[in-house]
Length: 87
Image (tube, rainbow, N blue to C red; front, side):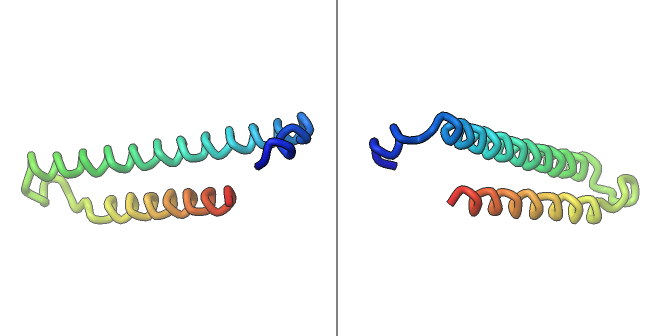
């Protein structure tokens, strides 16, 4: 945006842009928290497998991993949608 357009913007327009940026930032932070939670779950699962290599005692964790992968795919898709809305 050039300086002339920037100075001609109404305060309402600037507030909308600021609110939009705040929303995008909050959305990205939320997605980051979700990804961090999934990573922590995967780390926990790996540690449990390492400490107890007998799968009979801990049960199969494969469905749990599939759920986490679905959640991660969803979060990535949401981030891509936010990225498209910025453009």
